[in-house]
Structure formats: structure tokens, C-alpha cells
Length: 153
Image 1 (spheres, rainbow, N blue to C red):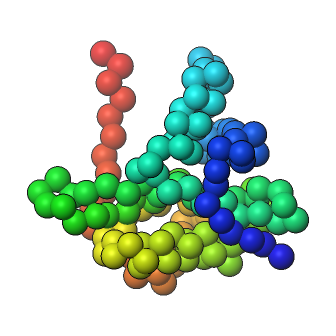
Image 2 (image 1 turned 60 degrees about the vertical axis):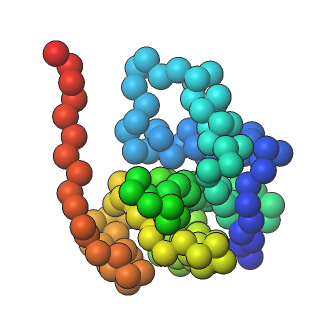
């Protein structure tokens, strides 16, 4: 049975292992990957007051996590939530476990009167059809397309 809770600094070793898998699977690890710098950034994310990090555990082993950044809109003081990364280990990667992690963030938002929740499809390692169905099932609308340029000049 899975349990969900806020991650604490005591969880850092398990978080680092799974976070590295998360960035590796997404192709975000290059040949010049700075593991010490990565570890420092992950620790900073975990303890930063603006971030809410929830973990999913199976038999006391971390099998998934979600990082939600809470901030305000630039033009008013209304809080918003950005789900920056949601990751499940391969053996537990299914819609039900994604839904449990997502519901945990939504519950936090409900408890703290946060009305605006954003996420990116790149946060979810699902096939495109599953991803779109999952997001639409949870009430998301695609409001924009992100464009990115590598500035190599």
C-alpha cells in the first residue's frame, strides 16, 4: 500500500536517487552533468519554503514525488501553484499513482485557497494520449504552447 506525505530533509538520499532517475529519463543529463551541483539544487528545492514536495512511498521506499512551487501572480497577491515535476519509478508508473500524487497537490491547494494550478506536459512520463487524457480529466485546459530556443551563438 502506498503512503503519501511531505518530504523532509531526512528523505534526501532517497530523493536524490529518484530525482537523478527523473532527469536521466527525460534526457536532461548531458556529458557535462555536475552531480555535486545537482545534489545541491535538489536539496535546495526540498527545503525552500516556496516549494511543496510530496513523496509517495511503498513499503517505506520512495517510489515517486511531486514538486509544486507556490508563488504569486505578478500583478496581484493571489497564490498559484506550478507543478514543476511529477515522477514515478518505472515499476509504479501508472495513471492511478500519478492521480494520487496529483490529488495530494490539489488537496494542499484546496486547504490553502490556491485557485490557479499550472503544469507542463513534460512533467509526466506518459505517452501523449494518456498524458492529454489525464490532464483533461483533471480539468486542465491547454492555454499556451511553450517555445524554446537553444541560444548557442
